[in-house]
Image (cartoon, rainbow over all chains, first blue to last red):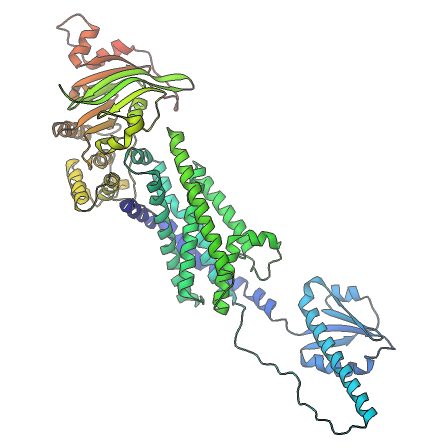
Length: 369
Length: 257
């Protein structure tokens, strides 16, 4: 193992002040800005709050007499039930006068909803079906009592009990963006390679190295290992600072560190391929950042993956999605079914890019001959 | 009979079917300071790059220390030191770190490596600047550091490809003296340069290249004899060179050679 080469390349990477700024300080600025900017958006997504449901009931409806009781039940749940005997239902929904509209017929009802109010519609449907089901049951029971002249029936105080547990699977915007941006900037760590690559390319260092006894594989590891270490060190600085400054909750420190290290390895391997593909360092960086941005876009780095309205097939192709999801779930739930998938994706990138990087490095040397 | 360090036979390199190095054959013996002189585009650097296995020959054979470089280059790499025309240094590494890095590429480690770094820096007069960053060095200091990076593994053959380009006379003189010193210590030297007076001052044998061919080879006196029959003629190497290669300007675009 070329330890001196690894040590000196690591020094080159860590001595680059602007890379250190991008990798260790910029994530903190991004986390602060985005977690604040999206705080409201995330809160509104989770807390639906009060909303109004319009209804129209036909004269012959069996449910008509039950509506005052239903209105009371809805009020308890924070839903305003308002009758609209006339008017266009579509217009009422479009103007957001009501969130959901229910048309009650003789012995059935129809729930009307707009595309963006599916949660409100589900809640409404649940309350209505529950209420009418209980009403029907009561009616049947009453009929049975009257037919059999039963007068002494025990009345349960409540058939359904509900309890609010202290588990919240939804992260705060600070936790979400705090985790996601440490992971995102780990990918951006390909920029650490610039300190070595540009220094080599503006001088005759590659020629001097080729005259030496080093093998091509040693040259590869001479870049891959220090880049991995540099990214991991820089990201750990940002990670530690973000925890201290913003109080971000990571689920399991050991697993998080392992995933971050694997991501740093994958970013290094990916970066080496890019820098071998193009002689121009700027082109490699721009292309690399575009790919990372696209992966991040589908992986929930900008719009949270929970609410992003993106094609699931594309989301499933983004390794960033699995890593993001695994780490966020570890933060909120303490476990994640996505951990193995994310490790699999990262290992795949490391192996594929590692082989490709070594082959490209060989090809480049052959070309120069 | 002195040992042959480098033997070239019919060495040829063609780019786009145009010969840049054209059937060159020569032998360099142990202990020589062999000067390679030629106008721009003569093929000097291409020839040296082939010797170092940086460029594949189109045809011909290169034998280094008795090994064919096509098949056994790995066996001779540790005996070879190469000082490229361009600087080969990391600006953001300190002087000692640069020397340590390039010396370590030859498998030297531990105490031996530390000793080699100190000796190399002392040799080029930069020991007191060992903690300075290469990017802050003057042109002459960088050239000296460039040499220090190539001698740490004690090579038996040192190839200097125009090592004094763009430096002050004091640094140039220092480098030439050091080349003579390494030669006295046992290293064979191949030295390519445009500067006639440098070649004249240090080389024991000189080859003049033009259009990819060696047009003259020998000691300075032998070269003078080639261009004049007057045994008492006091000709400089430059006059010999111009007589052999002509006064026509040699312009060539980058990448042609």
